[in-house]
Image (tube, rainbow, N blue to C red; front, side, top):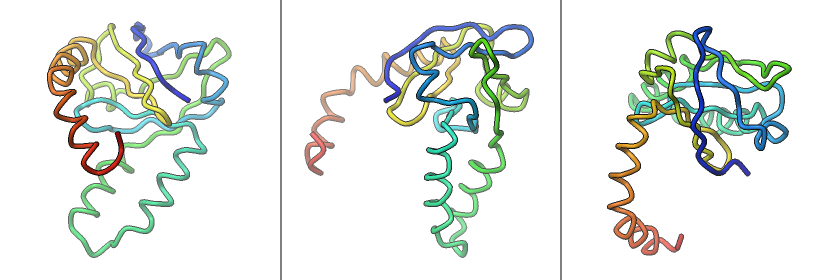
Length: 144
């Protein structure tokens, strides 16, 4: 399970070290794509295949489905983890998430999110204030 929050540096060659704790679970091939809230989503290949098989089942006739497919799938790139546990973040994804040298990797169960550190800190402060309300909503549908 991919959980936790790690601060890392994106080097000048756009390489990012993955936390050693996650490397075995992630495997050698990953998929990076545009995520929601202006972060990047990183999936192990097996999880990516599950996601895309669900997306394949969505009705193509729906405009919002087509739009989301274009957003999510056209921005996807398969990357390999190098021998020292780094991945290369493509320029267009770096620009999308406004990544500079300081980034946060957040483990979200079956994926990793890569955030600009300042944006993550702002988002985290906001969501922490709303945690009780969110928990109540999840309780209403039987999650918590």
